Length: 109
Image (cartoon, rainbow, N blue to C red; front, side):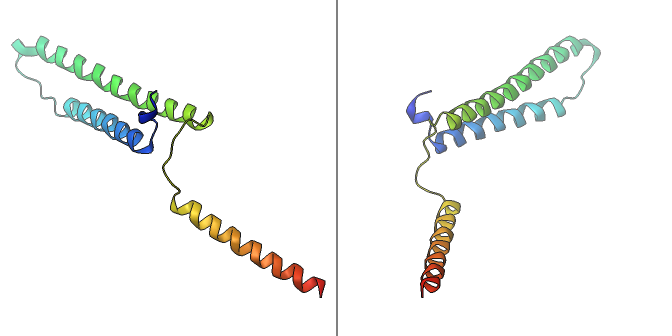
């Protein structure tokens, strides 16, 4: 995977596209309305095509999750900046550190 496809934005864009395709195919199958007897073969073929496309969309999502897991495990996932959870955790850690320093200073007296 190219480096420009490893960013969180690119992965989210790909995930949104894959989810959109999955939903579109599912809606196409649900909206199926059987026609007259003469069009039965064409309708059956349309259902087969939509079902195959639905399966392919699900496989694309599975492929994306596998790629994301590999990138996360091997450290190739480029995330931009820090998120709010990391900032809160760092702030809490600094508060705990300061509290421990005060406690240790009080014990020395």
